[in-house]
Amino acid sequence: MNARASENLDGSETVEEEIIRLSSLNFERMPMLEVMFDRYVLSLATAMKSFAGLPVDVRLESFDYLTCGEAMKSLPSPSLSALTLANPWNGSLLMTLSPDLLFSTLEILLGGREARPKGWTPRSFTAIERRFGNRLARLVLDEFALCFRQLSEVSFEIESLESSPEAVALAPVSSPCVRVTLYLTLAERGGTLSFLIPYTALENVRLLLSQPFLGGKLGGDSGWRKDLESKIEDTTVTLTAHLHSLKVPVQEALGWRKGQTIDLGIGPDQPVDVICGDKTMFRGQMGRRATGQVALRLTEEKVELEAADADVSTD
Image (tube, rainbow, N blue to C red; front, side):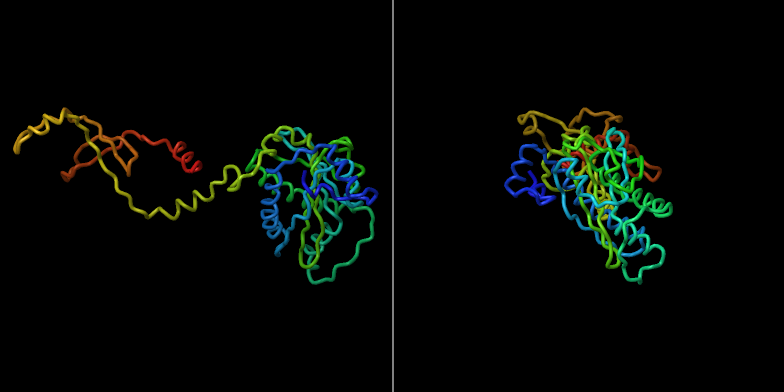
């Protein structure tokens, strides 16, 4: 169990009672999901910088395993909560923007970067604030989907925006879920961004997310390959044209004398193998150019690129 899951939410239980109660729920940890959110922090900071026009610090505050009821009670109220459908998982999750984050971002975008942050009195969100909140939520979810595609293809569709988490019917209160809390800082102000993800929403990718993370890159990130290709474009390699191999008994070879003609047993249409190092790359046909130079026309590719890529990934 994640140690962070033992956080006492209301102070009504001792630490020992909290540990016993959470142990009885038998939450299954999802190491790959934890790693994915660590990567998401970096990508969200970049996306928010482009959106707000200034550096944004994103910090992972907590990653907790707890019941859905406890997670809902821990969310700030009122707050702008987006009930979101994950396709093709056929499950729903909740993404919540705290009022501090919503109004800090809105104030900065409207030119109030130099203004001193003001306290917010709880009230209903206006139509303009909800429209902007939907835009911000869309940005956060799109970046979340983009980051998650390293593991599994997914898209997120906002079904409704609510001013209070209590108004959202996400999952049974006793069902397990993951609560992830991020803190975003913009120009010395900011607020929290929370994800509530019931286990039922992750059923289709549960086995994948439960695997231990052994290091390296996630999924099909091929950026390193492109960088490597750009670095070796001007590198030279030696290619060897291998025409034919002839096997003869040692006794016969010892009888060869100077000036003797040896029949190699090949004809004018004999294919030629092009070798780089110890790997056969191509097969071709010998010929001559108009200048009289010997030439080789490639007719067959011997190395499958996908197989080569698999070898590189394995090593």
